[in-house]
Structure formats: C-alpha cells, structure tokens
Image 1 (cartoon, one colour):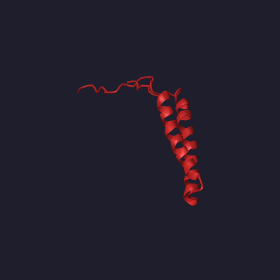
Image 2: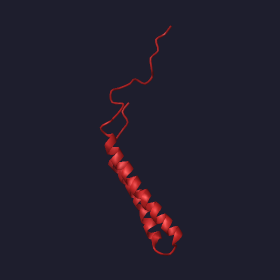
Image 3: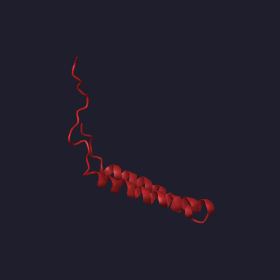
Image 4: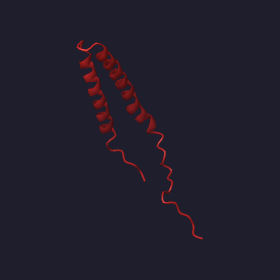
Length: 82
C-alpha cells in the first residue's frame, strides 16, 4: 500500500483571525448603512414619486458603489497565502 499524502498541506496561517474584525468593519457597516438608505429612499420614492426621493435613492446607490470601491481599494494588496 502507498502512503496517502494530501495535496494541500495545512499551514498555521490558514485562519487569519486578526484581519477578520478589519474586514467586518470595512464590509458589513457600509452594507448595513447603504442598504438601509436604499430601502428608505426606495420605499418613499415608490410611495411618493416626484417628491425628491429619487435623488436620495440615486445618492444611496452611488454611496453603495463608492463604499464597495473603497473596500476594494483598501484591500488591493491582500493576497491569498498558499
């Protein structure tokens, strides 16, 4: 019989627990804020069209894309370790 050797060897750096709070702060907080703004302005724009809520909805969508672009820009040098 031959010995089984796994293709992927476990390394001690497989779980980057120190970076997790940074990612959660950078990802979840903008998502919660922008999604709640989109929900608020989207519902009000649907109920009261022509009252100016469309501008808030467009700003919320722009803020969503902006926060996503900021997250990508801040973490652009992160690489996966093998």
